[in-house]
Length: 93
Image 1 (cartoon, one colour):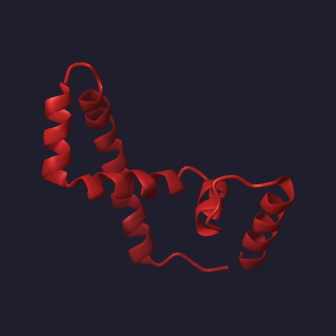
Image 2 (cartoon, helix red, strand yellow; image 1 turned 90 degrees about the horizontal axis):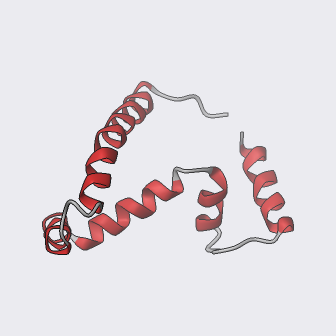
């Protein structure tokens, strides 16, 4: 099993802080308080690819199954495939 380094701990803390700070802002901008034009401006300022890539990266952090599916290039898994991915992941720990 890999041991977390001080750098890894710092990255995890920093990302956690940013997620906590970004969530209420994202929810607010996604609400009816902001217009389509304003949300379009956000995508233009940040870059649509950056917004999409961030969304995809955060989705991978929701759980290991989502991450495993993405790494396997799958959008759905049979139970057998899911168990095989979990066995492989657990073998690495």
